[in-house]
Length: 265
Ligand code: LHQ
Image 1 (cartoon, helix red, strand yellow):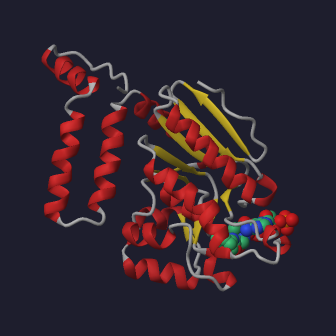
Image 2 (image 1 turned 45 degrees about the vertical axis):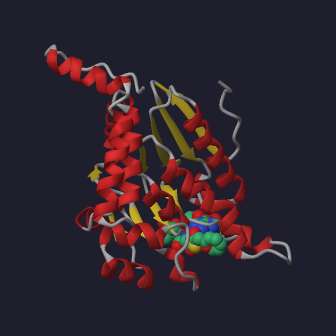
Image 3 (image 1 turned 90 degrees about the horizontal axis):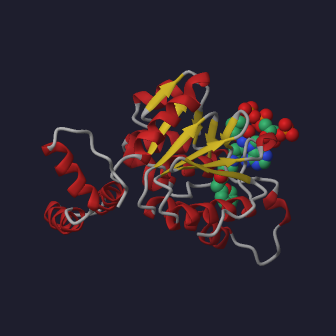
């Protein structure tokens, strides 16, 4: 297994089955540059390849989670640059890699998540927020429509009316309000964020990883399927899940009245 590459704009740490990707441009509130989204994608590919990794945590260094696209980068683009290609080559690959990764991804939202930074937080499977976190659909503030999957994820999480409001007003949402609208799973005091996320990540790292990956697959399919299609897909996926070692172990442990020891296989 190749060791994780050296990164300049993110930190990548793997321990006890948990990979932590830390966006690491704290003086810019972890605003996203092209190298940074490439490095995040490379880190996620490592997470997909490495069977020892059974949970991924994404967080930000310093007081921000991510302020979205680094706006200074846009001041120095070549003449033939288009935003569509910038999105297709960068953010689309990143957001789809998160969506398609068959392992749980937790966003530990330590501070502000804005624009494409909000897109990254929303593409995670769960969001645990510090009480100091906030959420800003910053696109409208610079005269843009949503990108980075925010149009897709936000309305699924908070419903179309709230999504419209947040996207068109650019209003900053506090962690508590985010919790009340279903944008985050949990809010904890700032000094309890690391510990809370570590406990959840540990739980995932000892869970039946294949079944979690397959759960992501059925949820993704169900998001755009009819009920009949979703039922059929569930049946096909269960045919796969029932053949895993962790299914056998789960049943055996239940019958032997002992806790299961899931290997992730
Ligand atoms: C930043 C940024 C930033 C650079 C703070 N860039 N430096 C994709 C593709 C192509 C086109 C465009 O869009 C996209 C998707 C997007 O992400 S669009 C949205 C882009 N993001 C924004 O418009 C957010 C801009 N930032 C803000 O509105 C505020 O900074 C927020 C609300 C995030 C945080 O406010 P504060 O907590 O008051 O912090 P601050 O504004 O003082 O920022 C701290 C520093 O970080 C500051 O630098 P300085 O040298 O003055 O200390 C900011 O300039 C810098 N910074 N965001 N996106």
